[in-house]
Image (cartoon, rainbow, N blue to C red; front, side, top):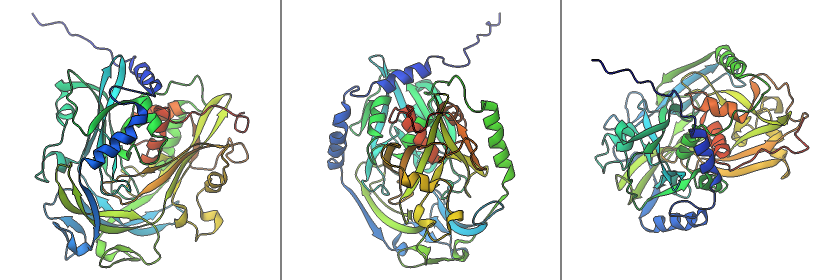
Length: 469
């Protein structure tokens, strides 16, 4: 006889409650109190030798500029390359430009291992050195690896805990989403963002620790502790409850987003790096004469706890600190965030949802006021009574040098952020964004960082008199 077909529940109705319980557990977890994490990170830094030294582009070991295109490649043909793009945007303040961009067509794994300990969900984070981080060591996902790395292209040690994310029998998937990376610096790059709940005992390496979601939220209040890759994974967790009502329905929000994707004509053509306009290569950098945006640099790295102990690589170094901020208001007591449908040249599908303000102010200061980003002045002029959250967080330390953004939640009123915002902006609740983050290529990296802060309880959007209506 044929065995009867067994149906399973389509969704885990308990996951949001388990995550909320973990987010409420803030002072201590299994093994480490939150106040002890800084000391533990300092101890892990002392336990290994770390060094990053700037070098000439010609001193990159294993990298070469192609004689025909000037594109920068690794000799294996793996990892990534740096190429040029020519961009035309029909609706942009700047209609056409050229720039270098990182092309890395392979999909990496950003995986966080979870386990329920003493009835509370914990997450296994790694004290990971990245050469581009100003403070080098930050808390990263359990596994943070490109396809080249975890398939051994570097000929180094195997990636620890990788088996939990490649062998389905080792755990239960809590979330698994393909998400974009920085659309201004990567060409159509995606990573798997995974949270996997382990089955059975997990042996914890010295450079790893279990933390609750609430402990992570407390650490997100501090500068440069939780790295970008951990933040983007945590943003995909279904934490936020569904609000009773919103200014627009979920269907209307998705429809608006679809219209935004449809109305922009963006043409991105890959071109030789050697021929891009206004960018010149010197001994140590490839950059612009006016010093704006970013430059290509090279570093030599030593890291005692990485799969490979020594290597050299190119990095993008931005020329200023960015600002990524959500303006928020309350309507009928329900918090709403002002999201921006932002075009970035490297996106797979033209537009993703971004914070209200996402820019490096110094790059726009030479332009007249009407050409500068909407709402930037509102964010920069906000007093302490309106700034609900502010912290400095690093971007991807494996590809960018000293790339940092000031992340903020700023309360606004009708005069600063009207109910009917400019084209390209829309009010959405945190729950609506949390729902979209469980699907690929809706929210960009910067929006996901701010959503992770909400998911982990690093910020509360309680109403006050200035923003309530």
